[in-house]
Length: 359
Image (cartoon, rainbow, N blue to C red):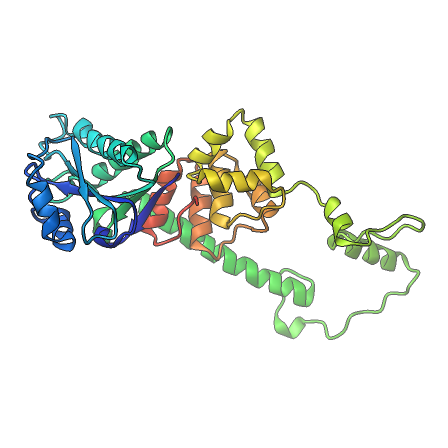
């Protein structure tokens, strides 16, 4: 199962278990802890009073009460003391122990807040990276669906330099797209890259049917539109089934071929792509399966395809990269820079309020 970043109030997330960034008493507090206790009602506090507290890096589980979940998993994150007192390992333990508890109680989905990034003072960007690394490491051998819930956009932002570089790349691509679009309109209208309106031809010149120019024109049109002339005596497809049999390699077939060429296992590929195992099974079992664009791009990233091969894979799914789409431009930026960490790409997409890669 994949890791999904969502912007929401964790007390409103519907899943099997939500994780509470608790204090060591488990009796409620401020921030996420207080919000969860308030939304769950007094029953949660009464059960927590029987647990005898919890040490940093460990986790304990209770019922969900009035929350839209079956369980609440309480974990105590580390307080920040400069990063040289075992804070990182304690924080990683919070995620690992919470995920283990969730699986032990039959959960299929669990939602985390960003642990220790509030009043405990853990630097937000570092807390985010620890969360992503710990969760993705666990998911290598697990089919849990995990949500990392970001309530406030200020909780996490990519570095100012990266944000600026991506923003500049987007601006450049928009300019390129608009320039190319105008040139294309001119080409279609006037047959040239750029021509003022006053110079536009008023009529298409007549070309004799048997002239060399006419032959060349017909050949050009045939090539441009990939027209295959019917050969006398050759049987043409007369129904949809026959036509489908003549299609070239499908998305599913190309994907499976690329996985084999890269020497990857199916599981390694779909997990690296942040794709659900059930969705991958559908793609594998149906050669004509048409994925969504984020799913197709996620596989291109998982396979670390260069830009041209990414475009080929997308084309098989019926899509193309467009410089009119911020989503497309951001993904293209990372591919062009050789960065294939899907969670790093998703962090940038999240920062720019775009859809994320994966299922």
